[in-house]
Length: 228
Image 1 (spheres, rainbow, N blue to C red):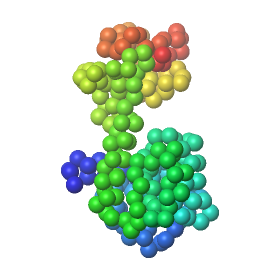
Image 2 (spheres, rainbow, N blue to C red):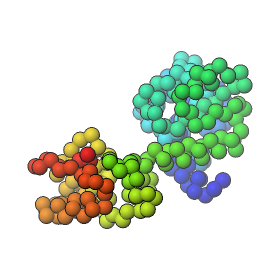
Image 3 (cartoon, rainbow, N blue to C red):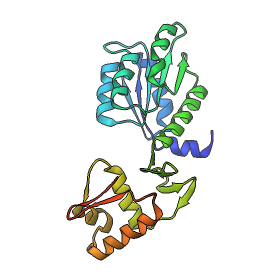
């Protein structure tokens, strides 16, 4: 396994839903060494509660479970999150279930008994999907996107250099795209322990706008800023 994959996996949290305790403990113990944290669930209902509470990065689930089966679990999760990477564990006899699962956008189907090499290949694919999901396209020009993982603004794969304040300012606006980020929030998060003057803020925004696509930083006078 590549070093970068192992490093990325070490920062991931996984939810593993499996009702057969022996299988679950064996796989969970194997993965625990490589991941940040493993959340275990013995059925679909427990898995969904853990998903809501812990917001894991990747989900690994069996199909056949009591209370709520794997297909129904993924259907509920997909109503809330269409992008979270999911691996489905199946039996040879589950073809009908898999037909039902086609529209649920699984990253991989693994037939039991679980082969660890195949599982790690699936997890590597999940991490690539996770990284892509953290790249946010900006407004009117799709050639610009912000990569949360690397904390980089890119234009056609070229890095756009930002200073620290510009970076934090832009992240704050991206994270709150549906509302105005107030001057108070900007002073607290961008200037931290320093005083934010009007001239310093205007200078930051002016310089940032030069590096962004068609003016997408909107100012509501007396309130704050947001992305268009």
